[in-house]
Length: 131
Image (spheres, rainbow, N blue to C red):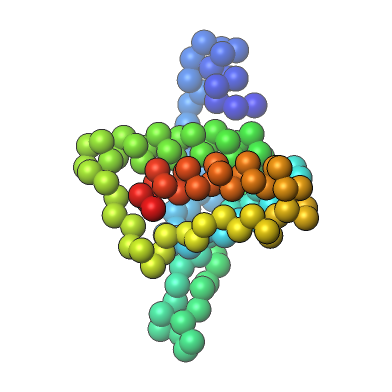
């Protein structure tokens, strides 16, 4: 049950307590693993002392697609709030994601759906990175 559902049912926010296994980690890389029922976010950091430099994955968190949509909403909202107060977050050109590859998805989802996703991806890319 989500916090919103608990609040709606009880009329108050549920208490938040960190469990004994709670931990915080730093990640500069996030990979996505998709399935029909959920989304796994795999976090990691670049180990530049390794030869060759190596991406070390350290944490995987799996969430439902419903939670992924809610997460996306709050991430965008927090970025907008941060930028309204502190100015645009600069993203170096070398790490801006490449444009969506329509051809890679046409066979899986069809040309119409793939083109629609491509247009949405370009709009989001333009809004976030100004490209």
